[in-house]
Image (cartoon, rainbow, N blue to C red; front, side, top):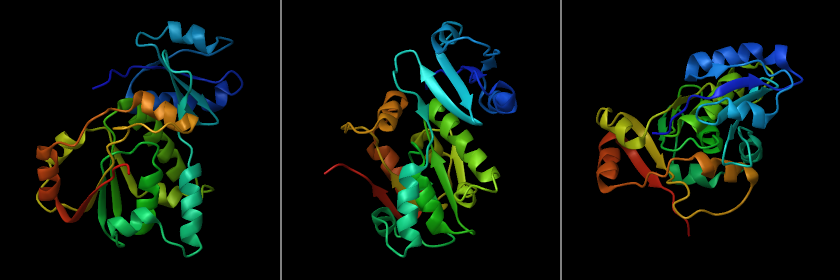
Length: 237
C-alpha cells in the first residue's frame, strides 16, 4: 500500500475559510498541518516527509506529489454530463450493462474520480447503496472527502447521490475475502490503466497515484461468490 502522511494546509487567500476542513481531513485520513502564510507549493513540499501536500481551496482538497506536475482533485464534470442525459430520459451504457435496479447494492471495485459511482448511485435510488473501493489512500482520501462535502451541501444538486456512496480505502482482494456469500447485487470491476490511454490532465493525475492491481482468477472466484446478480469487468477494445 502507498504511504500517506501529507502536509495539509490552505491556499494563500482562503486560510481562515478552509481551516476547519484541514483539521477534519487530518482527523479522517491522517497527516499534519502548518499555516500557509506566503509559502509556495515547493517550500511546503520540502517540509513533508513523503513529499505529499494537500491544499484546500474553497473547502475542496487538491493533492500534490513531488513527481507529478498536475494536481489530483475531484470534479464531477464527466458525471454531470452523463446525469444530464439520464435526466432527459436517455440511457447510460454502463447502467445498461450492469443491469442495476433501484434498491440494489453495487460494489464498484475502483472509485477513481467517482464518476461511475455517481451514475450507479443514480440508478440504485434512495433505498440502494454503492460501495466504492479504492486501494490508493491518496485517491480514496481526496475523492472520498470531496464526496462527503458534496453530500453535506444542500445546494449541491449531486449531494443526494453522494450520500448513497460509501468509500472504502481497501483492495478488492482483501475486501471480497471478508464478505459473505451473495451479499451484494452487482460487482463492477474496472482494472484502470492496464493499458493506459492518454487523455485529460485529471486522468493523468489519477494515473500517477492509482494502484495497478490486476484481477486474478482467485479474485474473480471470490467476486462470483459474493455477488447475487452479475459481475461486469471493463476492458479496452
